[in-house]
Image: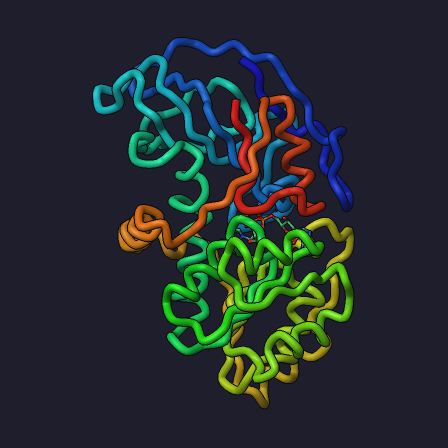
Length: 330
Ligand code: NDP
């Protein structure tokens, strides 16, 4: 078996030198264990935070130990009567081709209902983040004008579509580059698109949302958050989901310069972690499965092939190489 280890902790932007591919010997599963061949792996921006040795809502990756991440694999040998050989399981032993895992940390998924990668994307953590962040954290209601950053990414491409399905008055998205901006309106149902790389984010937002915005779903932080606070209407809500523009900063960036606008505008800024919404996973999954089945949500994916390309797929998230969910197929 082969697995990626964390070879060194990055200062600033990570590179291939921070990962090492290592050969490993796997035993046969004992009682309560599963031997799994991974079929599809997830790489996610939050993994950048786990490369740092700092306390957070998930513990840091250990040096010279296998990296972790979402994966779906096929059970080759089972020490648990409830999980048959041949079943597909969702688990956290990603970044490797084969894994020996405790059965209690694996969830059986039905790949006849949806392809394996969907359980890492729209029907998994990514989808729950979009759904819970918009409907719970941002307290979205029909008639809201919604602005989403990282709007062509895994979470963002779903947020815009969910907002439209739930009756948003107008949905505006921001993404990097003309091609992605076009995808926002042509594939993901956004009413207006901003290419933030073209500059003048504030001016572009004012043009796309002349009446202002009620909800901002923040995947990016920094300048996007500042522009959104400026455009927010009275009583506006901000879901603080991620701040990818800052994940590679060696020094913490100052907060939005216009934060004091939140006072007069009576804004609510609420951070959340997707685990908060786990108790509502069933409700989310039923709704999302329905949308996917009726074709009213497009679950976009960017697929990279081969375990050896996993670090590069992860690193390329920070250059915007993906549209929709970034997956590695083995
Ligand atoms: P994405 O699929 O959105 O991938 C990252 C995208 O971020 C890239 O495609 C790129 O798009 C954009 N990006 C990268 N660097 C920058 C930058 N400097 N400025 C602006 N945009 C940038 O990943 P996810 O959908 O998985 O995650 C989106 C956000 O949600 C992340 O911040 C992540 O950490 C957060 N998250 C939070 C969770 C929570 O529980 N709170 C759970 C899951 C995700 P482009 O080409 O448009 O620049």
